[in-house]
Image (cartoon, rainbow, N blue to C red):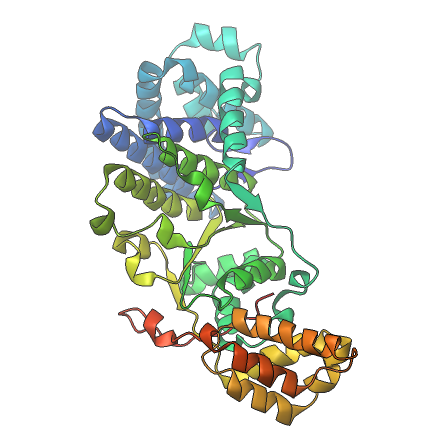
Length: 448
């Protein structure tokens, strides 16, 4: 659930920093996992009930508010009692009472029977003397144990991601990508429009049940630009992109990899806002998300569980997780189920190859003449069948160097023919990468 904001600095809802620590402690507990998992589910259910209550209040549904408020107050009071007993250093009841009390004042709610005031009174009564002593003199958002622990987690998580800085080419968005017409259309329909217009996306969800996918999987032959399309998607949508460095997540120490996964997702969620989601991208996903029946390792099972949980939670916190792989069949089946959109990105067909080469040549002054020669582009496109886009990019660069070294003349189709003949080992049989699902051909990309 996303915390709602007022015009001021008051958080509407449970204290996010406190909730983040509570969730982290539940997920990282090494003993009595069943208990901590149950507590985590109860906490999530309580928060979801609160969300429903707030939505009912917004809709002026008085009958539903009455029913949900009684239910929510009971859940929250039981949760607070449990937390104060097992994790007393968090001062759970006091933290939450202060948060809700601040909201009630901000919203000018003076009715003592309103659920906000009721929950403040219930929580304060758990230990009123201590509440007055601590909360009366201290701002909860500056409680040392909360800030210190949350700050460490976010700083740690930042180590495992790269915040993508768009190149001049990427800043142009989809317009700078050659080919990939169907894929760009699909991404525009399923996610781009929603990212650009959150209000319309919310209306589409209410009226038609259309939701932004929490997870997107791009798979297919290597070199077809899966990473690049994600980078251009982020710039087209105007949202941040975090590139997850899977190589840094791994650790030889037990439980450490799972802790790093949590820290990376915590950092991503800290950047996400209700009006501006964050994209989190993982390339070569099979390196960490391999089928557990293949790895058969307890540590791998734990890491997989961390990913399963965090991918699911990420969508609730406005983080969209995107993964790419050229080894679809090696991915764990449970992980595959987390991706609502699974898109097969195949080798470019003739029309796409022609569009890609035209784009490459039009970006070079000595290639503009060739870019306008439709017949020559047709011939080059025909000769580059079964070449991935990465190879076509390399062929274009080498053909350009041929012209440079031959008196700095214009680039010709013959330069391409020569390099293509020398690069036959770069061909890829796209059919080898199709999954058992036999995904349809979606689109093609321009790889820088």
